[in-house]
Length: 124
View: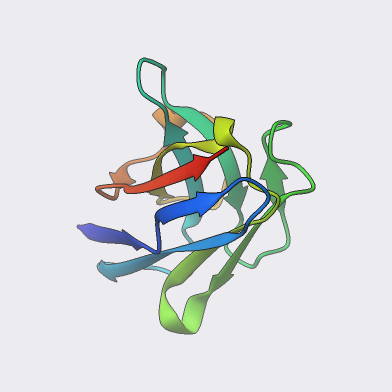
């Protein structure tokens, strides 16, 4: 089993920045693909960003491209999501997810392990 714990969410004004982190524990592996997803009230969970095990491959949702950056520190079993130029529409619960293969996918269905989520609220 893998446990994922997100942190770093909070309230920020539009145009501001925030970094959320995801610490993995348990049966972790540096070869896992890690992703970030988000879910706003009344909406379905959506893909935000994904990173391969060696950080060589990253993908972003069009809505966050150029503003968000995903990174990972395998020595610390931690994945980060740096969010800049935040907009009110970025308000959501942000979830970290792990996929126990090396194949990078953007669908939430491809991820086996999930964190409990951290709230990010962007005020206008």
